Structures are given as C-alpha cells and as structure tokens.
Image 1 (spheres, rainbow, N blue to C red):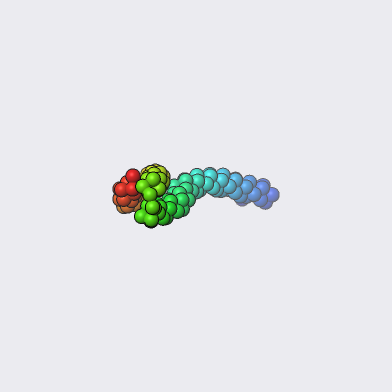
Image 2: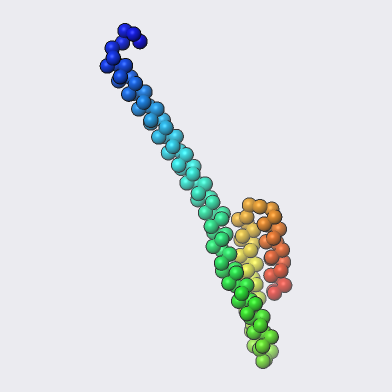
Length: 124
C-alpha cells in the first residue's frame, strides 16, 4: 500500500464506506420488515382480543339486566321473551370467549376462558 497514491487510497476508503453503508441499510430494511410482521402478529393476537372484550362485557351487563327483567315481568310470555334474549346473549358471549381462547398464548388464560364459557353456558 506504500506505493499506491493518496487519491487511490481515498477513493478505495470511500468505496469501502459506501459498501458498509449499503450493507447496513439492507440489513436494517430486512429487520424493519421483520418488525412489521411481528407488529402485525401482535395486533392480530392482542388488540383484536382486547377489542372483542368490550362487547362481551356489555353483553354480560345486558344479560344481568334481563335477568332482573325476568324477575319483574308480570306475565309468562314476557318472562319467556326475556329468557330468549338471555339465551341469544349467552350464545354471543360464549362464541366471543371461544374466539379469545384461540387468540390467547398462555395456558392459564385458556383455563380461565374455559371456566367462563362453562359459567355462561348456565344461561343457555
């Protein structure tokens, strides 16, 4: 390298730096795509499950309200109508809990969801 002129050394060093920068850029681009895949997976598993929880809680509240309506209903026809409403609400809750069970990653959460599904099945 002693016999090589300074201009050639400078050009070679700039080319080397450019190659390193391009390699780092390609690697970072690959990592960014991998992170995007993981983010999408996280959204599909966690965010959707949390979004599903809100209607379930509301539906359980409606089931409880309809239970009180059954107690206060003056006729058997009205009691039967509220019982049908509770049955359809219970089916919705059970289906939503089954969906959450598919999305969950922990075995203890699956156990909790199974117990919740059993508790809701009492209303069917």
